[in-house]
Amino acid sequence: MFDYDLVVIGGGSGGVRAARIAAGHGARVAICEEYRYGGTCVIRGCVPKKMMVYAAHFHDDFSDSAHYGWNLSVNGFDWSTLIQNKDKEIDRLNGIYENLLKNAGVILLHGRGQLLDANTVEVDGKPLSTKNILIATGGTPTMPNVPGIEHAISSNEIFHLKQKPKSAVVVGGGYIAVEFAGILNGLGTDTNLVYRGEQILRGFDNAVRDHLAEEIIKKGVNLKLNSNIASIELGADGRKNVTFIDGSKAEVDCVMYATGRKPNTDGLGLDLAGVELGAKGEIKVGDNSQTNVDNIYAVGDVTDRIALTPVATMEGHAFADSLFGGNQRLPDHSNVASAVFSQPPVATVGLSEEQARESHASVDTYTSDFKILKHTLTDNTERTLIKLVVDGESDKILGAHMVGPDAAEIMQGIAIAVKMGARKADFDATVGIHPSTAEEFCTLRTKDK
Ligand code: NDP
View (tube, rainbow, N blue to C red):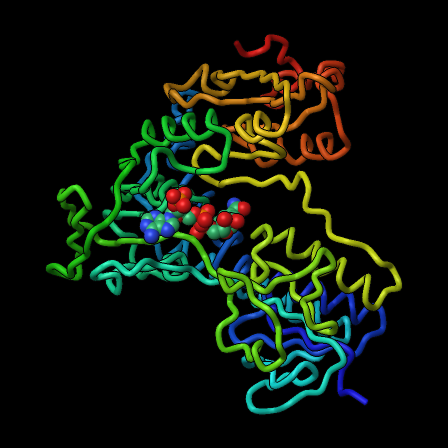
């Protein structure tokens, strides 16, 4: 009756996973993507960003190495080498994504998908009839309506700048702003991070926020809190003349906004199929990712649940297993760990102390603020923070937080324990790996006052 059992709109992490798994279960699946397969994470997000984080970190590594006896002469940094090598790897990954889909028997279409009704998706003027539709169109950066905003870039463009900016203003205090402030600063750009609130990383544990702010300032980022840009004017040689709300001014090569992302729902024809949207333009879905229209589903950033790649893939996989694999299951959004790849990185799972105190009668915290062993030989003043938030009644770990080298790598294991319902006594009973930074999680004995 229909051309397909499933048409997926959007070839990012959530859409690709869902298409691949559905096809593996025997469904006839087509997927369309208007840009490049891989989506934000692979093409212009997590993956290229992490490569740039590695590049930036060499700055500290080179100076630290001198204290271990290395005598290096560093003759500068070549932006175009980084960008070219990064692009090569992204091309490779883009190809891998396409092959994964092809090998699974998914029909790949290049073009923008649009709903004509609840059973028809048009791709580049060609209508496809389908029993089910999955929308996985992700999100896109939003920039406020500031005079001169057209002279600013978003995270989409930073990956393709022809030259490394000598100076930059990064606006925002969330994941992307903090990560790119660290990248640019590490690569030698004179970097200003401008955030409108009291402290960066709103929503994270306050100890983490304060600790990271101190560390990035020590590394040379000029952090301007309670500030924002009032206007941007184009100056000589393409430089940007920035005026801040307090009247102060800066002249920089680059202004980058990282002021949030919005779900990609414009022009998708969702109204023609009667799909309900929420206040931010996100597709409203139930726990099983189903919209108000029975045969239309949505996963990933377009649903504005938790905007993280592994969450989108979890949602896409659960959707495909449930609808086509005879295995009804729901994605589980509890205790999702995440990391901010700032310098130093932040990683966290569960509740912040502030969130825990709102929902639990008795909360204990254990914090350690220390210099890692590596820096006992260097003159690097970076300090590492480790914090556990514990339910004072049940002894259950409610949250674990870290700011310091390898935080993401360490937190992944801690997240398994927290997901399993570990108690503080379990952490205490675990023998540490010595000498390591991670062992601190097993040696926190003194409650914070
Ligand atoms: P976030 O929502 O994390 O942060 C947006 C920031 O911009 C906030 O600090 C916000 O301030 C500020 N802001 C919003 N509007 C304005 C404005 N008009 N003027 C000035 N500042 C403003 O968004 P990001 O863009 O950083 O990232 C989007 C999402 O992508 C993240 O939430 C995360 O889920 C995901 N992501 C995850 C990464 C990872 O896992 N490592 C990396 C990158 C992105 P305020 O706090 O006051 O609202």
